[in-house]
Length: 113
Image (cartoon, rainbow, N blue to C red):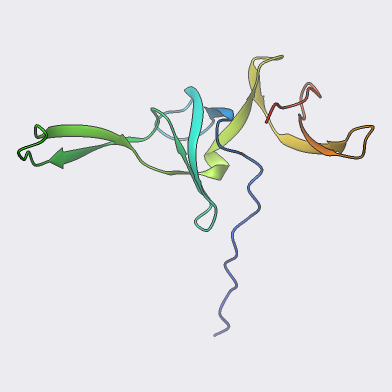
């Protein structure tokens, strides 16, 4: 059998982008991206896909059950467009100086980096 080349898709999101979850148990939640995992095609979104981790206490810190965010797939999030207040895709355009800029496809507004 032929082995498939599983290259990750190009992620258009960046750390700090305001996103909305469009699929899964946290559908509809709006938050920001904490970290990108490009090789796995996943992102870590603040307050979304929370998992419980049992932490053992030691001399320095108290033990207990901690809630930590787990990565979710890039296909389950969309950019939150502040102009339309709805999810939008990300596109690219060139400004007058020839610099490549990111835009929200729904409203055409520029995404701040």
